Amino acid sequence: MIFTKKNSLNGEITVPGDKSISHRSIMLGSLASGITEVHGFLQGADCLSSISCFQKMGVAIENDTETNIVRIHGLGLHNLKAPTEILDVGNSGTTTRLMSGILAAQNFTSTVTGDASIQKRPMKRIMTPLSQMGADITSINGNECAPLHIQGKPLHGIHYQSPVASAQVKSAILLAGLYADGETSVTEPYVSRNHTELMFESFGVNIQCEGTTATVQPAAHLEAQKIIVPGDISSAAYFIVAGLITPNSCITIKNVGINSTRDGILDVCKAMGADITLSNVNDTIGEPTADITVRTSSLRGTVIEGAIIPKLIDELPIIAILACFANGTTIIKDAQELKVKESNRIDVMVQNLSAMGADIEATDDGMIIRGGKPLHGAIIDSKLDHRIAMSFAIAGMNAEGDTEILGAECVNISYPNFYQDLEALN
Ligand code: SPQ
Image 1 (tube, helix red, strand yellow):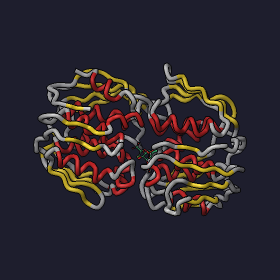
Image 2 (cartoon, rainbow, N blue to C red; image 1 turned 180 degrees about the horizontal axis):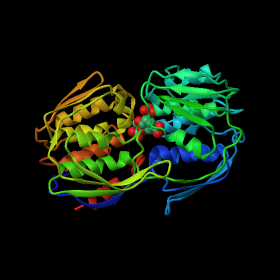
Image 3 (spheres, rainbow, N blue to C red; image 1 turned 30 degrees about the vertical axis):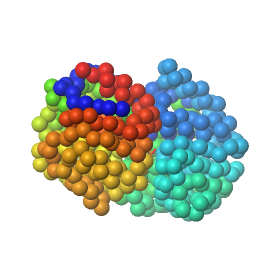
Image 4 (cartoon, rainbow, N blue to C red; image 1 turned 90 degrees about the vertical axis):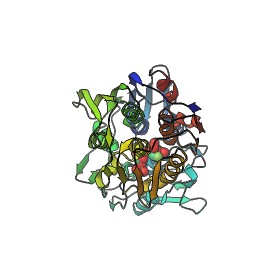
């Protein structure tokens, strides 16, 4: 894929459904009694991996890829079937960690693995708390990564003080907590995305959230639901930044999820002086939405640290691109989690942006970007990380010369039509 400079980007787009919510809809729909109907499901490879894993456990799931409506014939909490094959999560960390919480409590044994990237991502963070609950979960290669062997066991409720603000850790524990013999709670250093908690509530689970602690009671029954998945703010982020940094631009992104545990990029844009407005705000339902309009803006550097980090963790690669177009320095701190995503997103951003002429340096827990240096084209190795490929497509449209992205097809993980939607802007 080759990208060249654009003189403007204008138009209105609708991004695909939220990845986190789509995954959770498959899991809770499978454990509920009755048919859960999901509208706006994300047809990305990661969410298709979640579907295929639960199908391997006997759940009938109809996926209409034309309408993006998925119907899950839930088996109830205690009726998943022992899979006869390995559960292949592909590239999806969310499937691996959340599903492990469920598998830990089943009355069967399972093996979970995925691609080369998944087999390098840390699983000790879920193995430790799940083991404290009584789970029998081992890393087959003894390196605290997948493949994981999970022998289902009766679980106990625990209180877990998580060392990391991670929705995947929190959700794995809360899902296991549905099956525990008493209350289960998780306290994290900062609040991470709360889609599991919100969806628990709509499926009738007794869940309480106070400060940075979520507490779940064991469940007897989950009732099937209709779920409407909003557009993914992590996908909208590429168009937000494209509209702000490309000259003569105005882009509206319709129906984007603006859950307050996910909307950190909006605060950062405002702090940088962006022309960004929200309209059609709908916050009467569990997952609020809005249309987001951005216009070409004169930007200034900012500091991004602390409690906001979990609210924009997946947007930091594209925020690093944004920072290259701001006057002054942007400092990103407390973001060491970036090192254990689909790639080491600190190293990969610094290497590729340096190749384009940016003034950027890696730190132990983030990046320092001195904005204002014009970018030039380069060959970008995406490391098959979807967020890196999408970020550099936007950078390439704002650089002199050609930017070639290697492994560009990996956008398929979270946004299969990304390049077509980008092409449709003028
Ligand atoms: O599913 P996966 O591969 O972990 O996806 C990523 C992404 O960029 O799409 C992270 F690499 O998103 C995670 C996110 O970083 C999705 C997620 C969730 O749905 O619960 C939570 C975040 O991860 P974590 O480790 O902070 O809980």
